[in-house]
Length: 113
Length: 114
Image 1 (cartoon, one colour):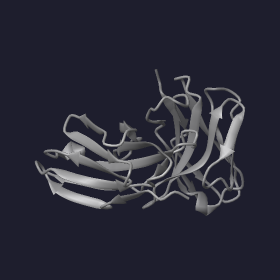
Image 2 (cartoon, helix red, strand yellow):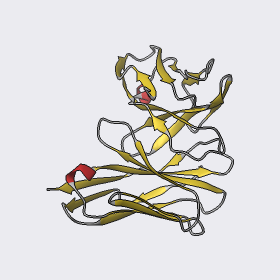
Image 3 (cartoon, each protein chain N blue to C red):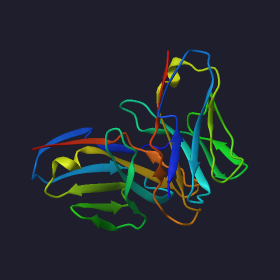
Image 4 (cartoon, rainbow over the protein chains, first blue to last red):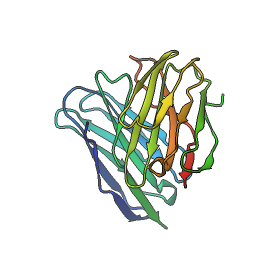
């Protein structure tokens, strides 16, 4: 069973704060690392799919970095807004997995106005 | 373009009853998955399929069954429902192997077994 860990489990920040959280995953047999944003009562939506060591992706105020050699990825949110409140999931895809993802337990972000 | 459609959205079952959770996608994705999400836990893979006629077990398959007779449909069957199957179920699909893309998720089915 693959181990994908996210930290912290939950985070409360004020509007305008920048924040980041971590996903750690196996450093062997790497194929891709996914980040999803999951709002309450909705379905998870893909933010990023990262495949290359040292890769950095950005979408608006959200960005992510990837280190496959040491098995971690960071997700950054710059100038958090209340609408950023959601659960952020990372998921590891191994090299022979038929697209199967192993998900972390998520980081719950609450942004207070 | 509807994406991934799951039905029903909510269901209450009595212990021992059976039901089928429906999942349909219209994106011509070969790969489809069923996950369950329990409080405080990550999504756990129940079953997956790499194409019509091909299915395989995931991490938590006991008590469930699937079929994939067409590319579009991937129903999940619960036989003899148990309280441990109370969960939120998500169906997802993605592009062909070799093309790295994110999953498209359905809206989920919240199942309670009493």
